[in-house]
Image 1 (cartoon, helix red, strand yellow):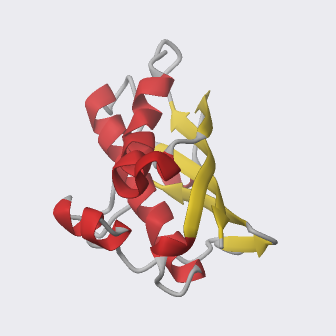
Image 2: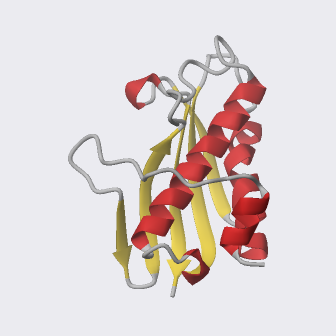
Length: 152
């Protein structure tokens, strides 16, 4: 099954990729590695903002991480001319959660993005990962995830 077919089966339509909000580019390809800048838990409805463990629940945060994954897929698609079949492997995700001081379930939150990569790419979506709790994220969003992807 193609990645596009898997996404359709999941009911996912990729959004227009987000533009950079500062002095950086959304992605850079160097050799066979595609580096994708951090994607926020944003969507057409405004996304998920707030502090996880305070005003955002763990379940809401996991859904927010999935939004980050959808935004990563949109950037991948843009970088690859719409051909997600060019993805050889999702190599690494870097996940950041705007977390309350006593919130410890950071890895479970980032699973929202990790699970989506496996759903979309199968075994090629299995990746190395970091999951970090932070004091603040850009624009008040709850979750941000960046990626390194091997492409052909």
